Amino acid sequence: MIRLPWFEYRAPRSVAEVTRILAGEGPGAMLVAGGTDLLPNMKRRHQSPATLIALRGVDELKAVANGAGLRLGAGLTLSEVVELPELGIAYAGLRQAAAQVATPHLRNMGTLGGNVCLDTRCTYYNQSYEWRKAIDFCLKKDGETCWVATASKRCVAVSSTDTAPALIALDAKVRLASVAGVRDVPIAELYRNDGIDYLSRKAEEVLTEVLLPEAKGWRSTYWKLRRRGSFDFPVLGVAAAAKLAADGTVEAARIALGAVASRPFLVPKVGEALAGRKLTEEAIEEAAATVASRAKPMDNADMDLYWRKEVVSSFTAYALRELRGDDMRAVRLRTARQIL
Ligand SMILES: Cc1cc2nc3c(=O)[nH]c(=O)nc-3n(C[C@H](O)[C@H](O)[C@H](O)COP(=O)(O)OP(=O)(O)OC[C@H]3O[C@@H](n4cnc5c(N)ncnc54)[C@H](O)[C@@H]3O)c2cc1C
Ligand code: SF4
Image (cartoon, rainbow, N blue to C red; front, side, top):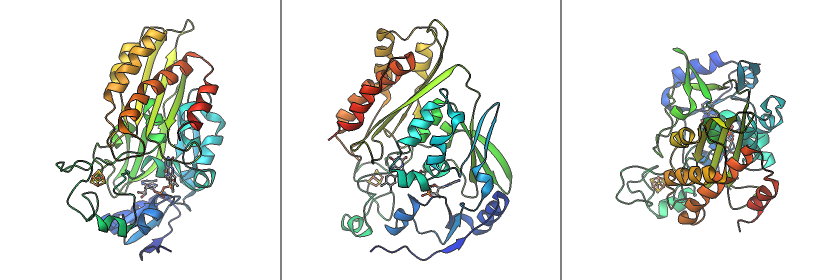
């Protein structure tokens, strides 16, 4: 049995209390929500915070507000997010992404905030302490070499959150609170293309809410590649959102990629290229090629990286056909089951 390291445990009841503790404890403290990623990571000594600040008792983080757009508390579990009737067609991509995270048990514990702030992953990092010690560790923790790109001074561990690309495609913001006040940040700007320092969130900040803009007339979707359809982290996530006119002309579109870099990111060119056009097969193929050209997967996740890159264009095309109104259920079922 692998044991957790020793830590002090704090259980605040309000966001104000969380921010006061964060300010007092400094970078030695970490927030824990569902603990589904952080606690296994602590067992493997990826993180050894002196203090854990638990968010489960903070009821404010569970709030859902539906007004001009939708506000989702960071403490909602992924199962609760999946069940929200407010997500409708416009925010369906978020529901699909949340529904495909891990397993039902993990979705019952894991939260939206924890998913958005998920640590980056790598085959040389997500291993036991002894395994990592045997290779003399790596840049991300305790070592000096990146085993994926040995000449690199930068860690290229992969962003593996499912909800982040979906939220980027939906143009969401996140609310960060500290004793200094509150700031709203476009979610794409929360992420850095750096496998170690992967968030622009300051150590003294807690993510309290995800803010979705009003999305009347929009529809969205999320396509995930993974080995086992019932369990695994993404090795590719394609999230797409579009607003279509009554005749099918694209008024606006956004496509974001996950799990092909240290951050999830938007491909702005493709939205610009699709605006004013109908989603014909020709337009979809062009968009798929543009999106695929931006994906630069590294050899530090499951499956062959060249094949993963090829799948980007197929999944982008599937996503756009789904937004066009095609029935993609059979393709979804096949992609969820066939990766062996
Ligand atoms: C077997 C297995 C399979 C998994 N598969 C997937 C998958 O397919 N897709 C996927 O996306 N994830 C997957 N996960 C990871 C994890 O279960 C989910 O990402 C989950 O949503 C994390 O949420 P949590 O509340 O448990 O986060 P925690 O583990 O509590 O925290 C994760 C990180 O977020 C920080 N954090 C948490 N809440 C906040 C907040 N409000 N403000 C600021 N920082 C915060 C923590 O400090 C920590 O760094 C998997 C995990 C396991 C064990
Ligand atoms: S990308 Fe390199 S430095 Fe980062 S976790 Fe993997 S091996 Fe370590």
